[in-house]
Length: 316
Image (tube, rainbow, N blue to C red; front, side):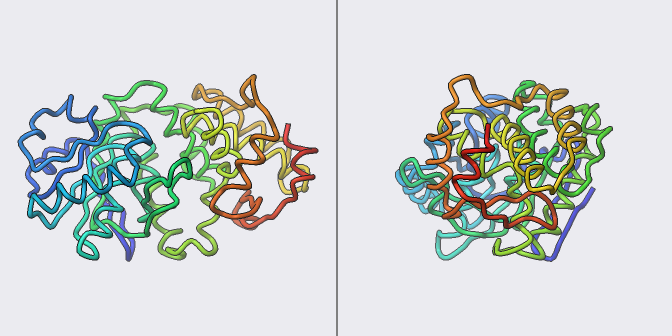
């Protein structure tokens, strides 16, 4: 199955990873993937340790040096979001840009982070402060990788799929409520179609692409302050941002309950953690790279600026 736009192409097929093993290039591979596919160790290889710590300036330099030593002109990134972010930034900056293939191995990466060209590394505690927008030549998705993931990792990705449903109406409620890793291609392809279309319209993220930020203003702050997974943080963020939208008469209580039902069915949290501190959360939101308290709720309201006073009163 091929999903394409003017900027990039996604090929989705069970078992397609075998073709990746035949590619000639510099492989940047998540350490956990390497454990399941030891044959990758025979490649020109840079192993990416799992976790945000790998997205450091020091690790970026190490990857550049390894790529340069390899003599290869194509990068194949095999892993989740961290691997994709690091590999994308290396590909976009080495010799002003080399060919990049993204091979996402988590549901979150398959439907979100590997698409759209955004990449980046962290500047200390500031996530993705150093990065570019650089489109991969191709994204290769093998749904069989989902069988290697824990239930928590699947739920982590489904949070982003539910985001697409809330904003764009696809994938369907039924597919998300009854998600099955053995029959996942339709959900994956629908998410890819939505994101590729949005990115084609607004690659530089100055307008309609902001719709993809739903749940992320609150979510990113929670992720950093409380060390939640991305999916857990975005799940809570979506519900709390929908509550704010209801205060602004932009959504109904029925909509909030619908999204909450989907999230809870997929074992995702919808309430703040027990040790939640509103001041700490708001402080982190104000440090976000967007520079102000900006929210995206839907296709019509994706650049809504709110005051700290409003949030202090309504974000509970």
